[in-house]
Image (cartoon, rainbow, N blue to C red; front, side, top):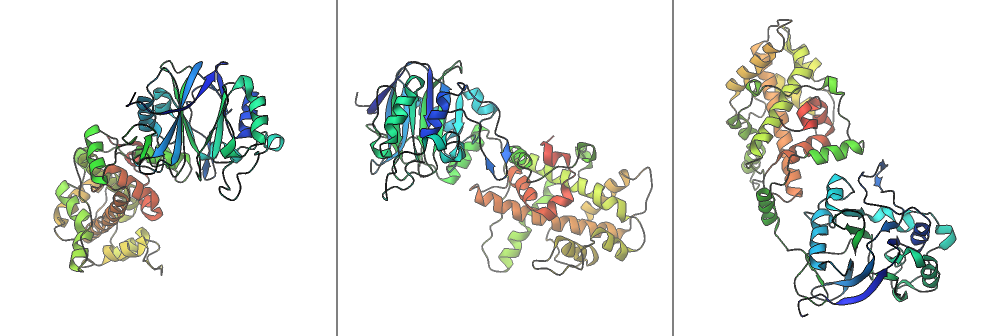
Length: 479
C-alpha cells in the first residue's frame, strides 16, 4: 500500500522470548530468567542511573516486521523499529514516544522505568543499561569484529534481537562479522545505526502487559521531529516552537508543580529535606503576608532594574492555572523562613545585635556578595535598593501579626525598625528567587514563571535553600 511503511525485513519469534543488546548482552540473556515489564525505577549509583536488565524479555510469538527509520531530508538511517505484524507500527511508535521518547527532545515523557511507563506498557532501556556498560559475559564473548576507522563505536552503538532458541548460533556467526555486515536470519536481526552514539531502546508491551510486541532503537542523534518511516511521508513527531509547545502543555494539563524534579533531586541525594517533624506548614492562607499585588513588584524588580540600566526586560510573569499555586508556594516559604530563622532572634532592643545574629556571615568578603551580607545591609539600611511599588506598610503589618501569632506562649515586643528591616530582607530574598526562577523558565523555553521553576531555582541555590528548607510545601507539593 502506498501509505504503508516499507518493511525492511522480518523476525520470527518462536520461543516467546527475545534476547537483546550487544553480543555479550545477548549471550548473558540466553541463560538469564525472562524479564517482564519493570515497575521500579533504578537505584542511583553516583551520577549514573542504570536499570538492572537480564537482556531477555518475554515476547509475542509470530512474525515481527523490521522498519528502517530515516531522516526525512536525506533518508539516512537514524533509528529502527521492530513490531509484531498484527499491530499498526505508526500508532505503536506514537504511543512509545509519548510515554518515553528521546531524553534529548522536549516532551519526552519518562526517562526511567516507573509507574507511568509500567501502566502504559513501555520498558525503558537507556545508554548506561547495556553494551560495554554491563560487563557480564564480556570476557567470554567480546565485542566481535570492529567496524574500522569509518565508525569506531559501531560495536557499542548497534545491537541484536534474537529468539532465545538460536542465541548461540547467531552470536557465534556475528562474532566474525563487522557490525554493518552482520546478516539477519529468520530468528535474529542486527540493527546498525551508522555513527550513532548512546543507544536507547523502548519495548512496547501488549495490552495485558505479559509480552513485548515492539521495539524502538534510537541514538542521541535521532531527532524524531525530522525522522520518518521509510516509504511514507510525515515525521514521527510534529515540530513545534517552544511557545506552541508550552501553550499545548497548558491546555493538556501538564503538571508544572515541579514535584517530579524535587523527588528526582532527593532520590539522587542532591538535596535532603529536614525531618518531617521539623518541617513547617502548610499554613492557613489567612496567615499569608504577601498578596498578588505585593508579589508582583518582587517579580518585576529585576526587570525594572534592567530597564533603568538600558537592558531589555527579561523577567517573565505568571499564568493561570499555576499562578495561585505559585503565590501559595512563595508565601509558605516566606512564613517558614520567618518562623524558623527570624522569630527566635527578632525580639529585643538592640537592632545591630539582632542583625549580627540573623546574618552571621555579614562581614564575609566575596564576589558576588553573599546572601548574609546583602540581607544585613537591607536589614540595617532602610534606603538600600528600595523595591518600587512594594507595599512595605501593609506587608510589615501582616509580618508583625504573623510573628505575634506564633509567639503567644512567650510574648515579645517587636521593634518597628526590626520588623521593617525583616520586611526588606524578605523582599530582597524573593527578588533573588524570582530572578533565578526566571532563568530556569528561560532554560526550559517557557515564557512564564511556574511553580516548577521556583522549586528548581530554590533547590539549586544552596544559600536560599538553607533559609526556606523547612517549608513542608516546598518538598511536598501545594495545598
